[in-house]
Length: 167
Image 1 (cartoon, helix red, strand yellow):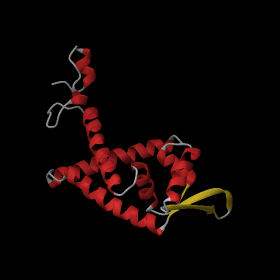
Image 2: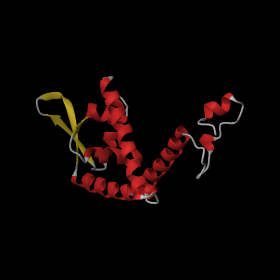
Image 3: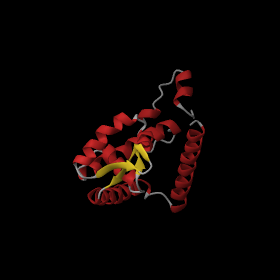
Image 4: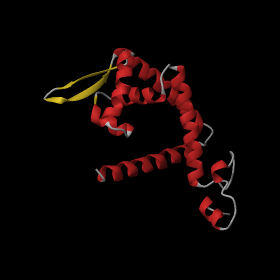
């Protein structure tokens, strides 16, 4: 059995992993993650639409559920420059979902907070998307589901640690 598409390609065999269907026993990690990403993004987009939000607006609201965030911090979370975040914030403010305000002690900095309507929208969206995403792993045995959660958390923590080190 081949472990990945690179090995298959090296031997002249088509690398079908990225197009492999469900239940494919020889799916490689990259192909599995790509397929899982597609499933998650599809759920996120459908739930966002049901809540009259774009996926980016939904992400913004969920990030702000934890409390106010600076514009620079939000730009980093979205992987964009602060200027690119301005349009998103303009639209969120027009809809009454979030607001910008000055940071006490720093005249140049702005922080973003949810409005009451934004908090309600974020809570409703988060609850529904969480329930939908939980269904992805609901067919797994409890120990497999816990193992998946543990490994996923470890991957995320290591990535965050390496990203923080590169700042």
